[in-house]
Length: 491
Ligand code: GLN
Image (cartoon, rainbow, N blue to C red; front, side):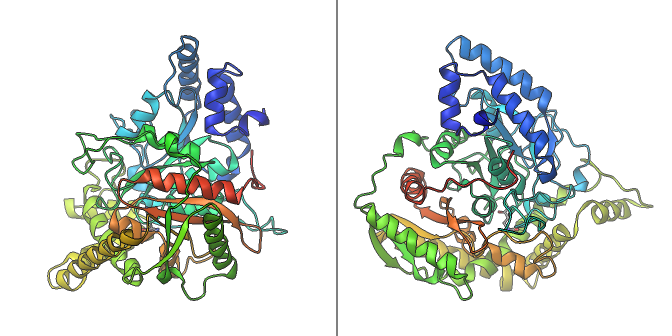
C-alpha cells in the first residue's frame, strides 16, 4: 500500500472522489504506517478504532456524492487540542487521564469537513520547546538521518515535533500544530514538510490548551503548499467562542495558488543575516532569492531594525502569559493530584511533580517578570519592544509584499544536544518569533539540504490576513526548489 502513502492530500482527495480507492483503504494504509513507524514516538495516543469508524462514514458520504473538503483524509492532531472523550495530555504529567468533554473548534472543523482522526501527536510539554524533548511521553524522533550516520537520533524540532515527524514519515497525511514562537515553522523546516502559522486571529484558539494566549495560533503541517491551503481553508474562520478570533472572510486559499508572482515585491531583511549562520543556510537563502527573481519577482532589501530584540522580548512575554495560564493546574480541577498535609502543600506537590523542568522554568520566569518591582523593567519593556517589532513590519510593507528569510538557524540536531543550556535552545526561534510578536502569517517551505543531507526550510512572511499572497509565493518557491526527497525512516 505504499503507493497510497505517496499521495499528497490533494491527490488523495481527488482519488477518493474518483473512487480509485476508499477512505477505509486509505485509513488502513495509514494505520499500517503508524505501526511501522512507532519507534518515532510521533503519536501519544492512537485512535485507530475511531479512525476506521470515521473512514466508513466518509465512504458513505462519498458514495452519496456529498463529500466534505477533507472527506476521508487521515489527520493527526497535536495533543494540545482538546478532543472530546479522547485523552488530551499537552505532553504533561499534570494532565494524567484528562479526557475533555468538548472538542476544540479547529479540530471540530476538521471532522465536520470529513477528516479522519488518527490520533494525538507528541509535543514539548505545554508546547514549550524547540526539540520535542521536554515531552513527558519521551522525545519524538525525526525520520531524517544524517548521511552515513544512522545511529544518531535527531530531533524533529518543536514544539509540534510529533505532528511534523508523522507527516514527514508518512504516518499521517496531514496534521495540525500550534505556533507560539515557531512551533509549526521550525519543526516543518527540520523535517522537510510545509508548515504555516496563519495571522493571529485567523483560526480559533477555543479548546486549544493555552500557552501564551496573545501569541498562540493553530496551523497545519502538510507535504505541499497546496495541501496547506486546503487544510487552512477548513481550519480558519471566526468563532464567537474566541474573542480574539477575527471577523474576516475565509478566502479560497487553494485558488490563490496561481503560480504567478510577476511583479511581486519580495523583501530581504538584512538583520536576518546573523553571525555563525551555517554557509548552507546562507547559500539556500541566496538561492531562494534567485528563484523568486527568475519567477519575475522584484527583490528589495529591507530593514527590520528591532529584530535582535525579538527573542529576549518573546522570552519575557511568553513565560509571563504561560505563568498565568498554567495557574489553573492545581491538582483540583484536572488530572494529577499529589496529596499534602495542607491545601497549599497539595498545590505545591502536584505542580512540583506534575510539571517538568522547562515548564517550571517558564513559570518562574513568568511570575518574576510580572511581579511588582520587575513588571516595568521587564514585562512592560518587552511589550514596548513588541510594538516596535510590529511597526518594523508595517513599515516594510511600504516597499515589499512578502519577506523571504531562512526558517531556522540550523538543521535538525541530536536528541541529546543543546539540552544543557536553555539559551542555546531558545536561539532556534530567532527567525520565527518576530512573526508571532507582530501577529503576521509565516510559512516554512522545504527548499534544500545541509552538508549532512538534512532538510532546510525557507520562510515567507506576509501582511496580516494576507495568507493568499504568502501561499502564492510559497507555492512558487516550492516549485522552484522541487524538494522531493523522502526521509530514511519513512513508513
Ligand atoms: N520554541 C518556542 C518556545 O519554546 C516556541 C514554542 C511554540 O511556538 N509553541 O517557547
